[in-house]
Image (cartoon, rainbow, N blue to C red; front, side, top):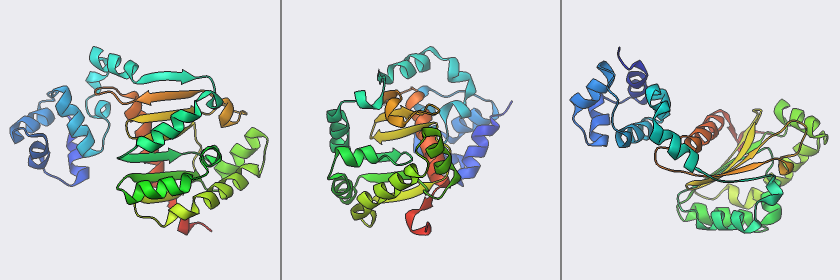
Length: 249
């Protein structure tokens, strides 16, 4: 059987097999065999192809999901688990933020605690953007049904929408800076994601409980692991569906 997922991923990116082969440093015939003969490439080539195509490695090659290395690498990505967000050391947030050089991705409904923890948050993010770090911030659209529903679940009603607007006000100095992109989403979140380069703090959401009371997973990307990339793929899906702040009244 042919690997139609890989074939479609190449087509969706608008490239040729030779382009993918050149990017990975292999012969085009090798990539052709991955597709037509469903050959499974080595892990380094799988990871490189998945990144280049913007696809999940396991989606492209489902058979490697049970690979022992993949399981060990995925387990190794969990640095620790905190019973609630309040248990995450304040210094950890500051350290991860300060040392980020490539990417800072924040996904939440309001995420106001970050501004409460770092009064200079907007200035730090603006400086990161100017220095070349890609900063992407996703907050809930205060007028969306998802924010209203979450506010009702937490027992604060319109209070959550008010917190989103307050967070946006805190972030306003960074909004026009190069490298900083802020969007509003209207999706139901099952967790908040705070990504700093290869580290991510994932704040789980529990029905009826504020995010601060829920467990937090500290993940660190490991080559061959799937947990970190799984959450970041979720971030990217929300990002694609979100709207720039300027488009929301």
